[in-house]
Amino acid sequence: MSHGPVLPQDAPEFARRHLNLADARLGARALACSDDFFAPMDRMLQTQPAIFIPGQYDAHGKWMDGWESRRRRNADHDWCVVRLARAGTIRGVDLDTSHFTGNFPPAASIEGCLLETGDPGPDTVWHTILPTVALSGNQHHYHPIEDDGEFSHLRVHLWPDGGLARLRIYGLPRYTPDDIREDGLQDLASALLGGRVVACNNQHFGAASQLLVPDRGQDMGDGWETRRRREPGHDWCIIALARPGLIEEIEVDTAFFKGNYPDRCSLHGAYLKNPHDAALVSQAMFWPSLLGSQPLGPDAVHRFRPDVADRLPVSHVRFDIHPDGGVSRLRLWGRPHV
Image 1 (cartoon, rainbow, N blue to C red):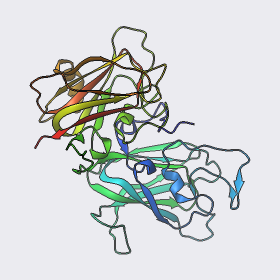
Image 2: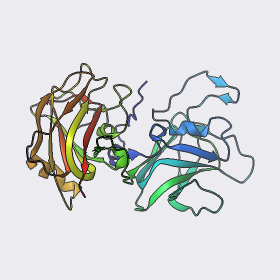
Image 3: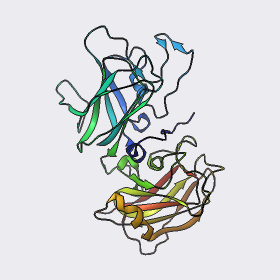
Image 4: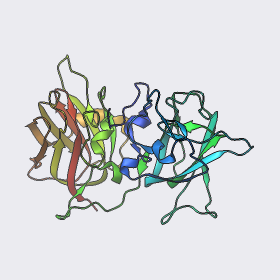
């Protein structure tokens, strides 16, 4: 079973590009709910895809991989309050009812709030992020979010009751100047600080966004992996750093990629003051080299120093793998440019 957030082939771009701020592995927590009699609320924040185990029951009934409330016998509805892993701007949500067929909610909605400290209370003012939408059984429900506000907590409403396998909240976390090493360097590409994948040419087996999440990969599904290339060229992804900075160390981790790691890698970068995502793919072809072609090995952490003598700060990088394959993590250690 993969620990990585395996995405359906038809998943929208926001799910492939942005971080799941409701991922328990990153620190998201389910704080309170109206009812979770059949399946605990924290289960819907798990990283891995929901599973179904035929014939497995517990003291409360059929074991289900998600949050499930009991059947309501009044006119009210169920809800759950979630603290996100980091406060941030939400670009899209996935209300996933996988394996919930006769027990899914007919509808759901989401509210949010921004608290600098603490958790919501009775006086918290909530803001509608996703108005009530219809749900079906055993499927993903993707909804883009146009609101540019920042949120630290969400309140999910099920109308009136039922089960939600996974809640995924895709967005851009707020930058915070923490997670600094003893030598003063910070991972400028970290997704938890706001680093994000802008574009990539292929992510058939694993989303490129997984390159930027914290900690080492947990299996071969927890990384960026492209299909086997059958034509000339190489694979690439373009990353917008959390903050422009001077890169001093490059870390490429091929954890668990043993027969499918890239033969080599390289890195290019540029400082862009007013970038437009749609134009970056063509612009990136002309960015100067930060790291020339370097050999990679299986299931190992590789550390490199940029090979440019007169280094300049960069805001974006293009990470190339030659010719194809899988990389678990990419870390770009540097000093933010003020």
